[in-house]
Length: 258
Length: 146
Image: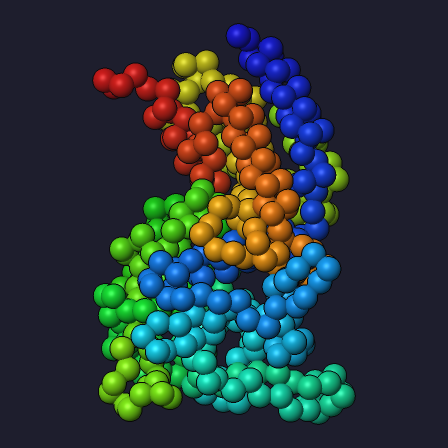
């Protein structure tokens, strides 16, 4: 087939595809990114389920059609009014939440909002009025970094060095259990939790893949690449770094935690 | 190739469209650089009759996959969870439920069918860099004993 003929056929096939699926893929930027973030969220919940955790959906809202998981999309929202996932194993309970603001243990003025965060059941979601936030009229919700087991970030991008190294800021500022930036004491082969993870949609070139490997060897973190191409099964990936629960169980004496 | 880019860009969110076009333009610039620097893989592709239209179309579809189809299909994949299928997720005003999941799965399937129709391997679209795509296409077209 000539190049010209091939191109004509290709144009026709693409027009047909666009006509049939345009309404499915013509979404706002917010909707596209939300879809990717939800994919990461599902993947994280599946990770816990595959690890033998009982998974339950909490604080669901009720509609005429049935129960709905109300996803917190902004740190301005009251987390108590939104749904979250509870995972439980060996009498230890953890919550997986979205868009909860973290206040760093390094300095209380350092606050930011990871896409996903794993907290112990008893983590306190603090709400106070803050003069620098909404003129002190709205409550300012946050969780202290001392309560954070793992903060995860989702980027539907192709990885680039600044994105990869930028995650280190969150790693350091959101995890008080990190004694030093490259402290590996929480890392255990069969740990119940996924180490703080940067979920990335795109794949990397070899130079950046080496950087990802180096970051994983240097810090207790994961960078998962190529999610657009389908590498969603976290539990089946033996290369992912896992961590133990950094804080003692509130239900068990210290040292008795799994 | 421009017509394909125009068709797929039509109706997209302005920022998504700009990102799609920027991806394609960057790859086109790299392709020109590869041509100017007599890249061996590109030269071999040319000798096999692979032209700019073919490569340009792959660039457009790769960029479209990474900016649109990939992220959208993330929420629709099948899981062993109740979320989405039994318990819909309400994200702002957008509902992620069984129906939306089916739609995005159908979108992904149709996109893969489109690639098959055009003799484009999905693995070529996993990368978003002209040199990597050229390399993958060249490797795929090599006889097995080469």
